[in-house]
Amino acid sequence: MIVYGVWTFCAAILAFVISAVVGKFLIPFLHKLNFGQTILEDGPKWHKSKQGTPVMGGIMFIVAIVSVGLISTIVYMLTGNEFIDTYRADLGTEVIYIFAGIGLALANGLIGFIDDYTKVVKKRNLGLTAKQKLALQFASAAIYLAVLGFSGCGTSTIIPFVGEVDLGFFYYIISAIVIVGIVNAVNLTDGVDGLDGSITFFVAVGFMLIGSSTYALGLTALSAAVAGGCLGFLVWNFHPAKVFMGDTGSLFLGGIVCAMAFATRMPILLLPMGIVYLCEMFSVILQVSYFKITHGKRLFKMSPIHHHFEMCGWSEVKIVAVFSLVTALFAALSFFLVIIGTK
Image (cartoon, rainbow, N blue to C red; front, side, top):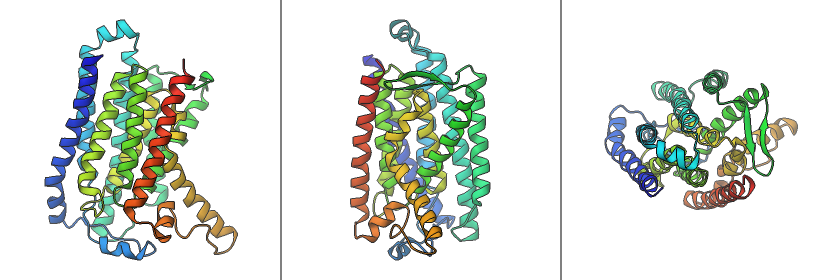
């Protein structure tokens, strides 16, 4: 166990270094290509100063997470026999979840890249249409779930304090909706310097602790890589941001968050663990619905919810700090739910 603990630490450090170093070269390259962000007209007026900030910066943590995640999994595969005999870990199933999960994240990152590229080429903040995005996202989710199904991962899920529940065919329908929902929720969270990266860092730390406590060491190392990659990105993205992750990064993060959750076989943990993501998403849904029902009235000053707090006078740093603290508390709650509720 000590060896795996050291490797988990190394995975986090390596991902941090790769992400931060890639940023050193990527940001000037994006400047050279004039791949700058176009700020929405209906966003906060003070965000206009961010016009032209390089986008697609998510590439830096994508490189870090994918490379370290794959290396970690391969190391686990080559050295895991003794661990399996001792702790009865299911190495084969875990590896499938990790490889398929990385594939899911990359597929969503590619969707985001196409969207970002369309935006920067046309020099306006409109890329793929909502229908195009959803169609591609559901397709990637379907492929991911098909891989899990054909690999024999089953249709059951574990719910703390309840146990293992087999959902049958409904598992695939519910899972596809959850995946697409979370991916878009993470995407909506990207609107304030450092917010999405900070939130995802704490989510990854939560899954890392859960993976360690359940002897899912492949998941533990992958989660450590996600945490390290996000921190490396924050070196360049914390306020005032020198680069934005773009949809390339935020959709990838949404996919990797789902990958970590499904690898625990407890995707229900996305409810407490992703509390901030869900608040961001539902604030938009509520705002749009209320606006239509009341013929023009607004429930929030602006949505997603982080913009509401901006309009209330909160600084970007304060929003990141408070939202991160909330995420950390719910990640800790999720960890204890697993520890107590799955014995």
